[in-house]
Length: 391
Image 1 (cartoon, rainbow, N blue to C red):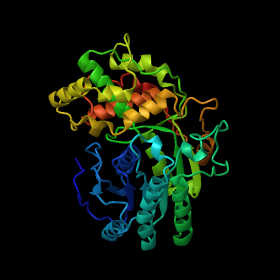
Image 2 (cartoon, helix red, strand yellow):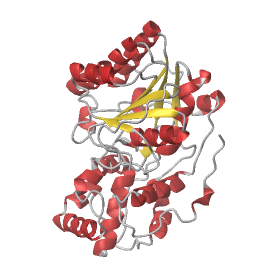
Image 3 (cartoon, one colour):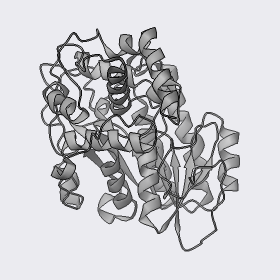
Image 4 (cartoon, rainbow, N blue to C red):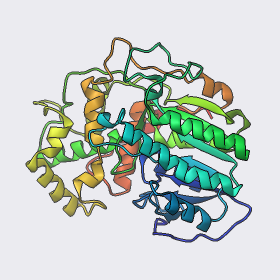
């Protein structure tokens, strides 16, 4: 696999060079795959952990502490000229939601981007930057919102590192002459382990432990929360498109798979695909399920038996169990006014990719199986031919 520490790829001055910050996360790993497979890109992955991706994805991996300005400046000075940046790094608090309005964490996230983008921009080779926002940019976690949420809405003024990132990126782009795109994806589905917010990891580990222990595969809670999902690989395709598209210059785009999704309503089909029964009592929530010593012991046994790449359950989950509970409990999802975004602007700009969200979930589960992050307990991607893409 081309994911060795500081692997050096042959220099090719004709290739654009994309630096992906946060490359081991859900967005970053998908972006790494998409740019590497596009063929005409030199790819450098920046992350503390080596990204886990398929073996056909060639990249150079570097590690640097984004909170340290000197470390970032040294890194930039050592790299071949970087023409494109995908900034998908984020620092989250334990429990997730507690950090979303924490002044210190907001400032830390703002400083991390400044530490990296500042020296990259001053070097003078930058052509395009992609930065990430999300539904919290509309203040949907704080107050009722309109339906649908559109990118043209005035900025919702509240404490959020999104605005620190956006303001600095705009200022640097104007000063140094590069373009940028601001992305607002909804709930992401990907194959990266150890991420703060990847429902696939939590659902896959839950299914594996249920099978191992003979437990019913029952969805905790009673919420029927309505969500718009984002296939991380589809999102990465959009970022590759935006990197060289005039239509994406200086724009903000909402991003979803193109459909609506309620996990409870999809649960029976998911269970059938996983060949698991759903008759029985559900655990109180995902967090308590994964904290149970019996369930942790079951994971340890199956991980050893199946020779999984990461045998530490926490290394697979990250905080995905917490995120699943937030999504599924209605803490922020089940409101009088749901958070629904319009993706018309992106389609009109020229990117029209879409995918059925249940198919996306099954495919990402299969991807984690193929990467030996989940056991081969079923074929969750069977009958996955319902996907439609209109690129």
